[in-house]
Length: 288
View: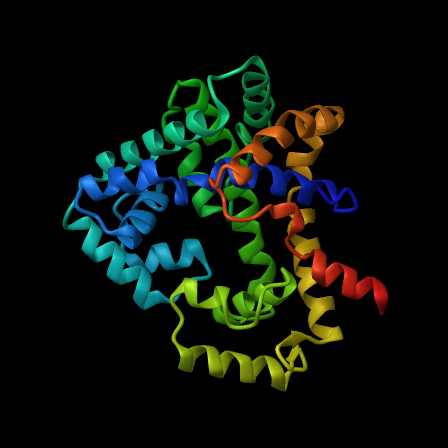
């Protein structure tokens, strides 16, 4: 882990594999398939399930980064095939099963991590945070790994909602994704396609960023790096209440989460170590 990252970002790095591993869990994917859903229908219907049976336009707004047509097609298709409660149950059982497979039987350390994570968001004001708000009113799974996953997901979505607010006044949904893949040190025009944007939409967004001197030659410019880091700093700042609640338990929680996050990444439960994302960019910035 990059210890130089702000504490709020270090927390993000550690909860990400625990919370978002469900999107890669074969157990969850199989459960959606048994309900008749393809991968995209399973992803969009399950992640947005805490919002209720809202239309695709609302899911697009809540998720922030995706091309609207892709979201609406998946939501409309999935809603005709599976009951919402069944989808949410499949998501929970898939997350639990992957964690148990990768981490082994629940431990006292996992229980303590769950306790701390739950305390970080319990009762927080949900204003402006749609996905966090939806998750916060779902019943808890009341299983060791189900509760760990839910507690981590609440922290994740609380930050994710704030991240959308941090970039909306600066760039649009396609543009922020283009910036983010470069900020993470990924090849240009790679990650952005996973958000459903077409080649034409990506070309236009790239041109808009180039006109503003944010990208050039498939890289962030100095101004682009500064803007993208400023967006991340705003996101960090939005987690002030979460971090205040964590207080002097910070290193305890990080020590508890670190081996779990590593085991999930090493076991293929999450595709990359989040603490390494952006290291290429950060090293380049230090050389300037």
